[in-house]
Image 1 (cartoon, rainbow, N blue to C red):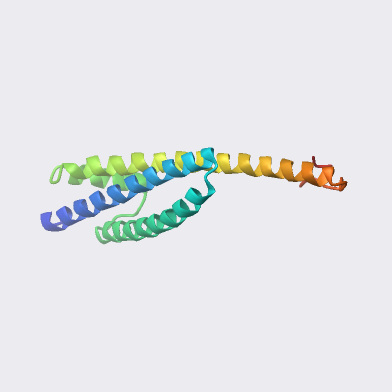
Image 2 (tube, rainbow, N blue to C red):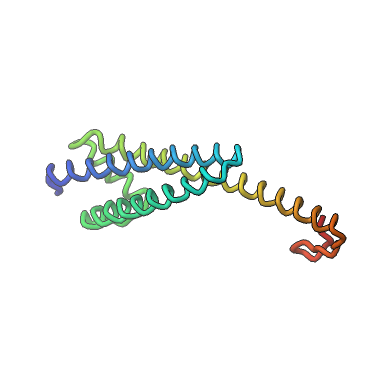
Length: 151
């Protein structure tokens, strides 16, 4: 059985992870807006911040996983959810924090997907513009990834 002191420390770590993940979500929203607005300088700055937050999240994730393994848990989602529910009898906020982390992780996944689509759209636009400029210069021998003429 886990001591209430260890469980309280774990809850504190979950709160820290939630705060960092919330900051990451906010940063991804700023990145999305910068991509939409075409603010390249903002994107460069946000990329640096994104890398820093990712490093911090990796460390927090490793720490959480180590703690759960010390409790004899496999890291299967179902088992971790059941353990969090069991521990909520002792520390009620643990299950709430865990559910908030899972929700934030889904938000990160959605924002990352959206930002990726925006980047692909910008890339395709730039490729078409480059092809048009290249063609206007008299060089019409551009080909796409499948070998088709590209304009």
